[in-house]
Image 1 (cartoon, rainbow, N blue to C red):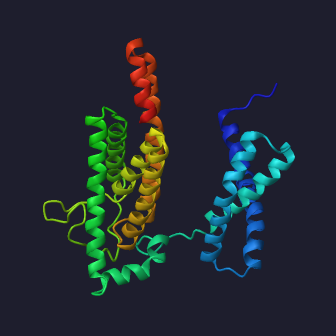
Image 2 (image 1 turned 90 degrees about the vertical axis):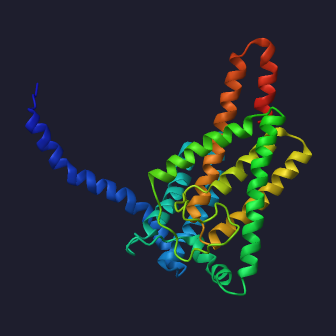
Image 3 (image 1 turned 90 degrees about the horizontal axis):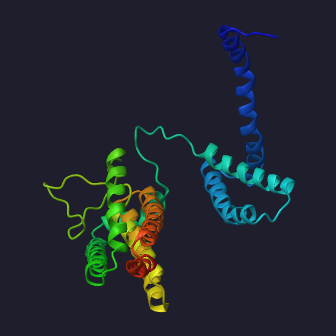
Length: 297
């Protein structure tokens, strides 16, 4: 029987590393060849190819998820489809060029909405900018009032609970990674939070405005009924307009909006699960009320 000393094992691993590294490189190169051929044939630049690959990658994800979940394809065919999906994903990552612009953040939302940013920064757009800020602040206070009313008056604490949990998550994330102030930020009187000497700091990621709006929409959908569904859709449209304004004024980065929505989805689901668990553990006379609160959360 062969007996290897620890030094021999280390030597074998050292000898095998170049082969292993080359294997990993080939795994990346193989799918990249497919996406390179496709984007080069279309005559796209690196930045254009990155956006094109991202659009196709995202569009392919829901059907691929459904195919895998339902087992609709034989394993060999599924493997081929997954390979194509991975190839497009590698096309996105390998074309997302490293940012070496001395710390400046590259933001596709800022770039896309640059014309609107210039208009809001101009004398002609000052009135629209101020009106947008005031309406946005009124909307934020309306959300707070609705959450307080449902929790304290209607005794449906679900929205308040999600607000508490998401607030803690937001502060933690925002302090853990502090993003620089976006260039071209349009400061406006009437905006929330109001800029002042006593409140000089600001958490960009995630956006509290967008996160709380998403939580209200999810809460309305859990309530059920046509009126609640229509109200949820109205909140979604308002949240979309709000997100466009926040990005256009450079009050937030695009990633702040995306992160806010993802946190809202996770927190809403987790709080509902916690409420269902509490209802199951509650005394029988309290179980019905707790389950109703979880459903209407």
